[in-house]
Length: 97
Image (cartoon, rainbow, N blue to C red; front, side):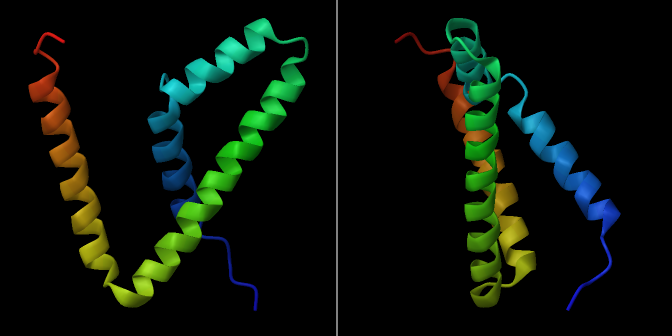
């Protein structure tokens, strides 16, 4: 059964993923591969396919988890995880290695 497109969800998902991917190690690795490779289109196709594959895994896992755990609790756990990781990175960034 086909459902109507949820444009708000599409736009918010695009925005969050787009902003999260800007300047991360994946983008820098792709930049490096494109600079050193002979075909930018092959690098684009490989990186785009990888992002689609990892997104598909996340969607399937999220759908499966939502059958076991309430979506509200999943949102809370994700938010708490982001806060904890941010705090860990913030506190550890000033330490000499």
